[in-house]
Image (cartoon, rainbow, N blue to C red; front, side, top):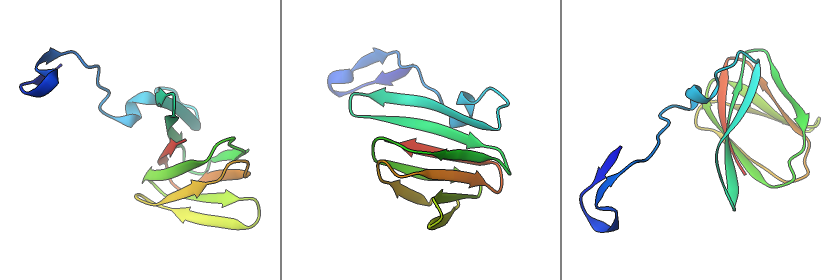
Length: 113
């Protein structure tokens, strides 16, 4: 619960809050993707990949940005692009481009599309 003292939100407002992206991944799957925000204009997805595992090659119908939050991984587009990722790095993914992600360590990513 948050308390706002000024402005149009003055008073007590009940807001459900998830404090950590890792709380979204409760299963033991080696690759886990959990949407945690969605509106009419976009979606944010938390992705967890275990060390040595791969988010298999796939295509997105819309442009997206993939942000590395924790760990080390490699983003690849076919045979042409291999981009190492570590915390703080990101890649812009064009629509209709085949891509995959391979984790060298346990990795947490944020996908916004």
